Length: 266
Image (cartoon, rainbow, N blue to C red):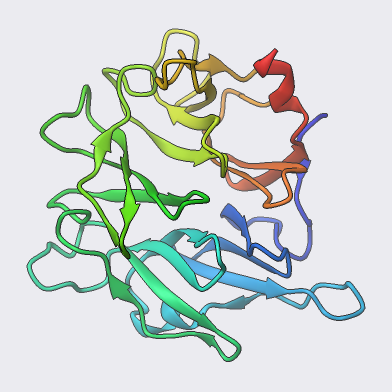
């Protein structure tokens, strides 16, 4: 019930910055981001038949544009796609902006990435994509209807496509930066990041919100119990089996028992 550094010496390296933490639906692939020469790159490791994990390697899409950044990965519910953000070249967009891309997962690795449509990728940053059980997409962006600098949105997946994103409302979003949202597959709770709230301990803190009976999101509850710190706390994720809660603290990936979430639910 106390967060500790995840996989020191394999994933978390001394003197390096790692962030993000995402498992494939079957739990056999783990992806994370690491800074290489100051640039975010996607890495992965896979589990061998004997249960041990291989040495992490840079994911093929991150080798395509060495000077560009890739981060914030998420698997689709069926494990067929990896969604991520990148500032790689995209016609009609500035090179200093993150957009959401996706790569098909095959037995030979990730295929050439493709961007999502312009109704998802606006003119600003799109960050931290997350897909839930019905295939719908959550992400963060700055749009005309934001309450503050950046808000979190949901795009319903229907008939093979994402519909127009909808703002999650004041239960999640406020007058400051919001983002980095993990949503449970059944969409009963959200763990999200907010900056500069009165109860915050550092530059960004983690909060949990629960779905109310009327379908709205309840007020965010600040995570205590040694989770939030004076450092930046961000990138929440829960493993597909619901057992472990991951997040990034400053430059390290942390993990702990996901039962901590039930404490706040009660």
